[in-house]
Image 1 (cartoon, rainbow, N blue to C red):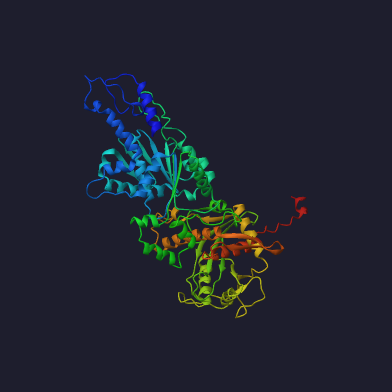
Image 2 (tube, rainbow, N blue to C red):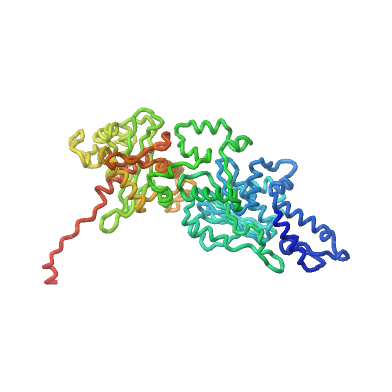
Length: 584
């Protein structure tokens, strides 16, 4: 602030004499006033400049000034610190829990900037433009509700599914972008990145960072660049992500820059801070979620405790590479033409056990022209309720096989998993249909079904002795990019319409949401696995947090092992009879 004032003082000395000053004065600098021709505004110009400087430096106090006597929003101490940081530093990284109110404060900071920096353009980017638009409209309405005087600063506001444009009387414009390649080439003066933990650094460097390359120019005669203005500002706001990710590294570097006084600020808090001020859920509600056996330990740590989870050294796979595989926009609840479907099943105990669940993963296989596997897409994931017995698990697997017209179901047959294999080899009676499901036979063992004849549907996998192959094969699918995963649940775009234009059933929408949610759990599980070197050069995996299961990963790893070993083969080449060419 002192430097900014010094700059203005120096600028005042070189300003030409004039009898009037408008809002176009360079850097808000006054001119010498002709007392004979001046009006009340000119006489109080120095006070106006002081007020503008004060408002820029204390955005929270500015909002206090325009808060109505009744109603309105009363800022807490932590929110004031956050708001001031986004006005005073060239870059702020905020890692806050759900219920903190970070998006509201973010938009208040943006609107404050639009008021006091004429013609500035600012954008909020999120995983999709739809997501950014939805967030903006909701928070915009709240700001107008809590601070009615804001209506005097806004000329026009328009919100659509994927577009936002708020035009201020200052000429400033607020809009939204996506954290995607389609933002490449856009230009704004400042940028706020939502859910930055999901960012990939290559995309950020290529498409988002250049957005703020061009600084704002003042609107006076000189149209100059103010060297003391925070041009090129990029703020990051998110719940925490995974250790070792690009954003974890960016955050660590910003902490170093903050310590070295390079104009960066890093702020963070757990759920206890907003809870202390009475924002969001109560302590009892949050602790109940933590104790809920269905809540993922990693998910709670990230969303409420603001802890960066997973393994940074010795991780099973590169977490950045794994997150790059999340490119599939929607789960396939119906099978596609010209695709093959396989099922992987990791079997848990039949009795209830909070930390031991079964998991069924449906994968979609796309082949090259020569028959080899091009891509394997995780289309859907199902977690049967704890306590589901072997017969019911077998029935559910046969339902999935029938629905997707499955080829082979890979079942973990070690120990208790053998019980499900035996049930699959029997006729299975489903209360939802008249005729029973046929018995299945195994494709790789000498076991025979109960009635002697069955469909070749089961691959009975014994992981003992091949654990290293299972692990290395999973790593290969990730590193080669042949594995494709569903996008995060928060990026899911549900427009309520099918491809034929008819409205989707609520049950179908819930199934799609569940599949994307379970894919989030898969990422949590993989991030929690550490690669372990055993005797004889063999490999294993250890869970860093024991409460976080690895059942979904195991089911996926099993079916990928089967596909690589038995399905990823070239078609037999047609034998050529060269004599045919002599007489053609």
